[in-house]
Length: 409
Image (tube, rainbow, N blue to C red; front, side, top):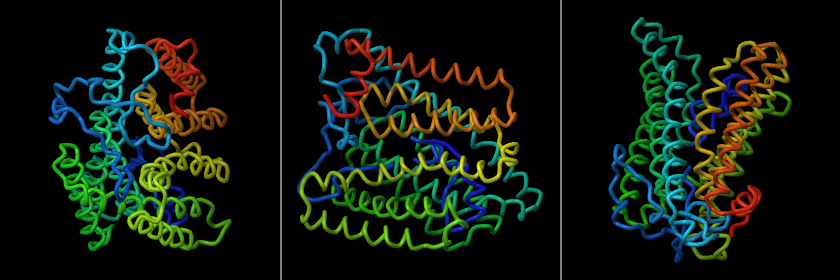
């Protein structure tokens, strides 16, 4: 999911958010996770044929997805059990499975194009010795975006969604490159940089090992608990800081959420919660990262509402690229019935990307032709995705696919 909260960060330093969190899927992206606990395991067993990561030769297979889950279990592999085996084994079904995976992989390109200009500009300023220029990039926002991408990386690593893993890994690496540049310029305090580097190294290593089933379950549960506490602490603080100075600038929301998150995790680990509540706790980090993505366009629109003259400072391309990147992931999220992924990608594409283009068009910041082309392209793409999903599953209406996504089969 994508977005820019630079105006928000400038107003409220305690608000950690960032347009680099765009790899939703963007900017926001999650480990959701599994049951962080105790004697239940939501982790499926996958065939050995998918235990090797070969990005160049990867061909998605239906064999790596299990029976369907309800929305609460969206952090585990899913494929619909509706329809006959004949439909699922049909060539059209297999082709759409493969195509949606390739679409998700192709979303790397727009997200990469979104990141590169900032990295190049920072490099030029560093070479020129213009370190003060990098102070315009909020390191707190970058840090939040990085943590979100790490969380979403854990989420997709658990689901074995290779293309989405690549998207989030790219988000982690590209955001970390910017953070390294900020540390070199002295814009980010060294102690925070050291801790951030350790988190990145641990996150990439643990997710890689978990993808190949090389990680002890206890270590993975600890990592999931850590991302759960982090996500729950950051989200309410960002939401609160959006409306500063109309409300007091305070760290109280984040502090309260931190205490509640720690309490919930401890209760889950000590067996004081029901199985259903343990599942809820296990999925919180992914959902909080997703909700942070979803909050970003709201924050941007709030900023535009308060300062409509600033709309002219927005780049249409910076809105179009996340719209395309997230839009490319919508068919895949729908196909595997991943409610969290579908919600985040759809929201980022429609509200953040297209919604901000609407604002820019209303204030004459973009041409009518540009706006109409973007609108037609987005909604045609979403319509094709719904129609194709309905067809390959043998349904009579796209509403059936959406119902199954929301409530399970």
